Amino acid sequence: METTSRVGAQGAGTTDASAVDTASAVQEAAQGGTGTRRSVDGYLMASFPWYGLDEAYTGRRWLMQVGAAADGTVEHGATGHGEEPSLRGEQTGGHGSRQRFAVVVTVASRPLRRSADGTGVLEATSVSSAAWLAGSGLLSCTWPAQMERALRQDWLDQQTALAWELADHLDDASWSTLSLPVDGVPTAFRYRESEYGWVLAGSAEGGVHLGAYGRGMSAYGMGFSVIKEITSYEH
Image (cartoon, rainbow, N blue to C red; front, side, top):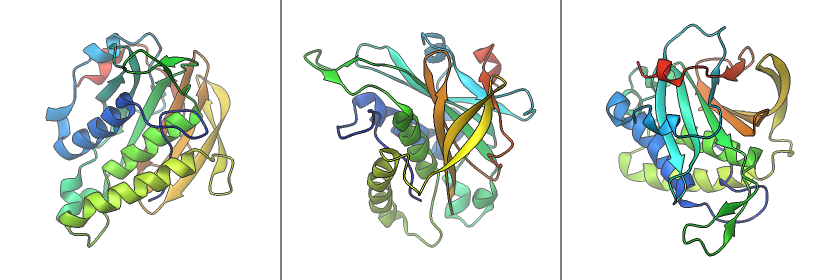
């Protein structure tokens, strides 16, 4: 797999703690199932709207994790649709590769963000931020066929580094353009497929950037909308 960039804007920089925490959280959810998901409380603390698949999707919906800055401000999070991705099935050659899921990542638009120690500023969030979080999420629930457990971390580190570069260059030929409805309005997304699934990223009204990733569910017929009641995703 090769997809996505750091939780900063286009251009160089380093990931902040919340970016790393979210990637780790997504990985924990992918590996551990429902027991590792947080409650709805973190989502309710956000100052921005959460997005998920629109009402055309009638399957299961579930919470994943939120990412917060050093001062506790919620900056991004993810909601799941379909089967919860798990590495266990792939490790044993089971049904993992046939899992059907789509995860929507919502990232608050932050033109100015303070560093963890309060002495400086971090890069603004951007569409690349959403692309990086979506790509790292897909990587975290992927286990390449025939790969030994001892080698997976090296593979994940290598692919994540490549993902950062790809997400910092969303206008390159490796990404295509896909128009999907967001709250009923056609919206342009940058889209990329690999053998492990797909990733897309764009922006929505209301001060957020959107990312999404999935496997077994086509992105072409999807639509996104504001989640009116986030507690509906608890079950």
